Image (spheres, rainbow, N blue to C red):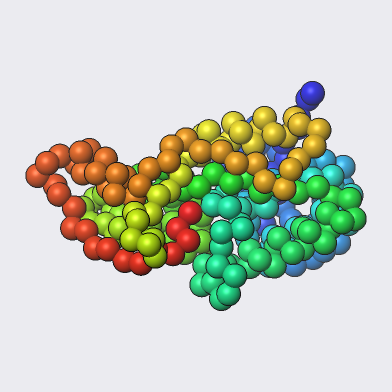
Length: 226
């Protein structure tokens, strides 16, 4: 099967077109523009969130796009808080919109990958142009700052250490590329590179920094951290 990749962006991206990518400029606030430029597209892999993503979903359905993967590259949606969630950023509304369109023929799936290793890289995820709109993409925003040798370790309500699943963006990309070739999509694709307690993650970071760099550690009650 031959796959043609088209990138849709709100602004021209000359650095991408210069290396051969096809970039289509769209207006997320104009449904007709979006739907017109999605005509003939089979599968949409979204990397936007909030109102822009919901507009993209509606336009994809209008353009008869067959499949849609929302920007949900994290933990299982079912484990999110049922009440108010400060980190929701429109995710609940997005999944409701996808379920609505699924009942009318457009498949969707969430790529559940846990925490991206790039969160702990120098500069955080934003250094790799990931998660710019999430509010937690900078170095040290999540769990620990390796550079500053500090960490916050959450515990579950029963006193057990919280655990997280970690995956690299490269492996997620390979997984997504393989999934595109499948005939049917389930509501979730799950993957993980490693499953570790948060204290073990901090221990690995301490080992990388060296024994003279023991982390300042604070503990807190666990939330749904990924």
